[in-house]
Length: 103
Length: 303
View 1 (cartoon, rainbow over the protein chains, first blue to last red):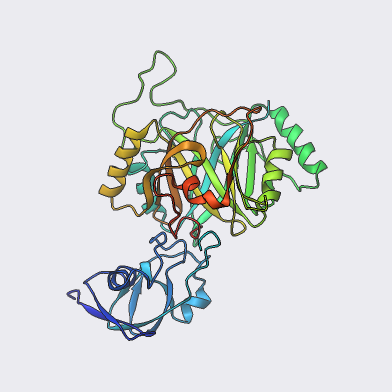
View 2 (cartoon, rainbow over the protein chains, first blue to last red):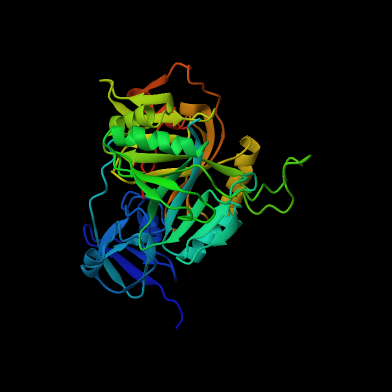
């Protein structure tokens, strides 16, 4: 099946971005607005880019159960760096992790 | 007598083959063995011992344990008594708990990290040998890191962990970062003459901030950055310099999201060197001397 461009819809404010073929949700959302989602390890280990898929299908790669346990995965949580749209998707952003060292 | 160095780290990998490829082709370590449980053992070209890095397949990222090498089996007896005298539960692991490793002590530090202490490991030799050697071997891959350098561990109570390593394991402190009230945020601890072998930072219990590979100088750091970029490795920050430790550095992430560093420079601390203190209001300059401010990920991302 040829890879397609899918729309990524941000639930909080209705903005949309086209995910390029094969592009992760992390890369697509950062292209829309770098403040939407935090840039962490981008390899499925740290969990700071976690969000919820409210609608649509994504393909996911390996991620750490320490930050994305199966119970959360079952609720539609994904790590954006390891989730690639397979349809138009709507995402629910989660609160950013608190950094005690930054103002 | 006592602890000679951070002898090794065991790291959890979400995709073992991807990690083996990365640590060999990008970092430039070589595989020295694989055991029946699937653990893969690696070393740097200038390390004599069988391995300093163990990769283990896991469904989570992070640190399995650190390994501290002591000078003799007598040290194991000494530290068993000292730790047990302080109420720390110590187990004994028979020889062979890792390939080439002799009998080992096994205990948990107050930050929730497991520690293996051992005196003996099979020596397989460096790539340049020990007789009239060349300065470096031909055929290195990627960054070609000669050795493991240090690790930064997170602990909810940084003071308690620091006390453990200093009072029970006889580490010395080179530098520290404190709040305006004088509470410890982070500590740089050493047993060698490098500025740190283990560092502790206030953070999520049991988690790791990064572990680091030694490089010679700024030129090597620049070359490492090229290799990292050419291989599409995810960079956290750098190349840059630390105010704390004066080290030259790049931070980046392995295929499971564990943070790695290449580190060069620094200076030689001694047990009688006064501790260098950094205050919280100078944290930006202390951690990233050129940028003079933290990035968001550096103090948020742990595995």
